[in-house]
Amino acid sequence: MSSQIIGLSEWWDSPAGRYLLAWEQAQLDDWVSDLFGYNALQLGWPALDALQANRMPHRWLALPAADASSTALVSIVCDPAALPLASSSLDLLVLPHALEGSADPHQVLREAERVLVPDGRLIIAAFNPNSWWGFQHSRARWCDRLGVRAWGADQAFIPETGEFIGAWRLRDWLRLLGFELEHERRGCYVPAVNSERWLQRCAWMDRMGPRWWRFFGAAHMLVAVKRVRGMRLLGPAWKPRQSTAGVPASVAQRR
Image 1: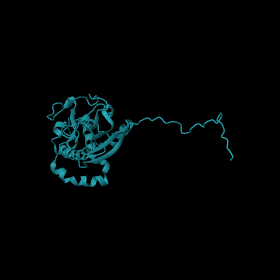
Image 2 (image 1 turned 90 degrees about the vertical axis):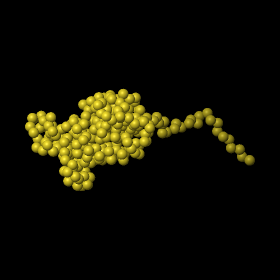
Image 3 (image 1 turned 90 degrees about the horizontal axis):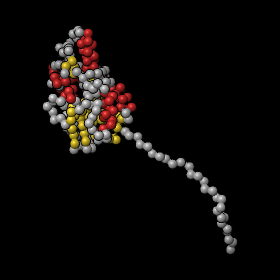
Image 4 (image 1 turned 135 degrees about the vertical axis):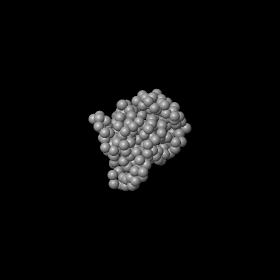
């Protein structure tokens, strides 16, 4: 495997990994602090504490079996495509890059829709394929397949998370499942370099990115609400006219 694509456990400790995790942690703290309910679950990425700013009484961390060796306080070890939870049991579900690491991201979203209560929130963090990071990820994969060394392989650090999913595709999938988009943000416009010095030099790209090339952030995050369309039986808008047959006519009396 090329040095451009590394495992998540190693990537979390890299400068690029810490840079991205810091940005995503700030967005999650801002979003989940105002979400209320009883049960919240984070699925994947234990290096990111997605629920630390949330005040729900029951908060859990679930990891796939492949990440069960993590030192984080894990409550559930399960397959993201088959959650061992009852339907309509969660008020908040956070999927930090869980879709890219799954072989069936469609099923992961279907499970998310099943376990959320009506008007429950789903927060997704994903890598943007239309970014510097997405370009470097695609280039590294093609070079690995061809057995050649990519230019700049010693500098670029990209996590091994499977296929990057674009924001448009993700919104279409959520719309088909009945979710309604509530918030969306993009960030991390710097290149994925394994150098703290170069990340600081490119920090100006994060300041200019939201205004000049806001669709090319390395990560995009969104909040979606599960909507359940209720059915209401309506009566006829018109009322039948009552028949006057058989009704005695009033007799006016003259004094």
